[in-house]
Image (cartoon, rainbow, N blue to C red; front, top):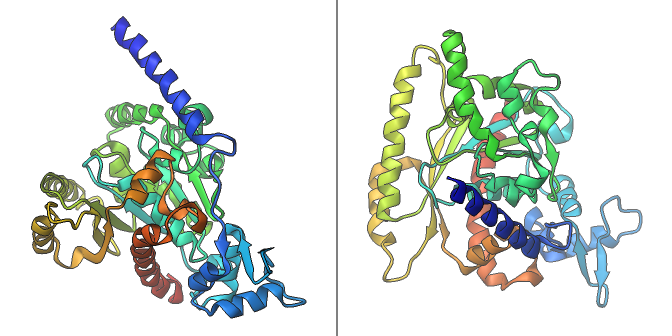
Length: 388
């Protein structure tokens, strides 16, 4: 055991060095810049209209930064989001318009299989929805804290257990509730409640509370904590551990909808079947306690799809179509070297500016992710229109 402790310390030193080499100089992550053409695409408008609004005398929209002859301009992420909110035809949520009567939506991203792109999908959903002008909160419920790292936080150095949901798990009457643990990120419009390895303590605390207080609604802790935050965010994205933990159970009961990324490989498909088997067991146990529990949608999206002749995707895809039917999204996220290299830099395809990588390679992954975010957003826009 002493040797294992020494080994762990050596690994910590190694990962510290790796983080420093990947993430320096500070700030470790920075948001991408946007060209006039990219903002035009986000807004669904002609490039000349964006250029006119940026250069028109008296315009209240950001001018960006001119380059070259001045016909080309670059904009920050915050400026890009301003254009989307003010010029695009995307329906602006009650949060942006200042009207009341609609609540932010909680989306759970879950899969019990490691390597399913669960965390990357969570981050891409958060970024993609923010690019539609939404305000998003990401909550990392995985002790491995990978989502926190993608949000630019050095999980074990900048986050401790008092910065996670853990204090609220211990005491639901804590002043400020979950809002006390929200941190801003490098990405405009995206905040985070980070994770830390100590989150695993919840798996001991919750059952101990249940023993001392049998009536303790251990499955509803997170739902109650999220209720006040719904008026502050359009979307709350929950990233869970790849296991059926008490925190995952809380996320299942708190969510309005669920997304399962699924890699079209045989073992991943079999693992997804196991997920739904466990989920059905949970549902049966909670039918009496949560008779009104329902999801707005459950969506399975194929991720890291390799369409090469040697891939098993062509074999597994019909399995998923037969198994999931209407739950299976028509959108697929292709495997890409851009995603692999992004992982080395703790980045996603949305983090890359046009100048950072081959635009065709990045767009091949970014386009279906944007379409998927639009599909989710369009569904909830209908509810916002009705004041739900």
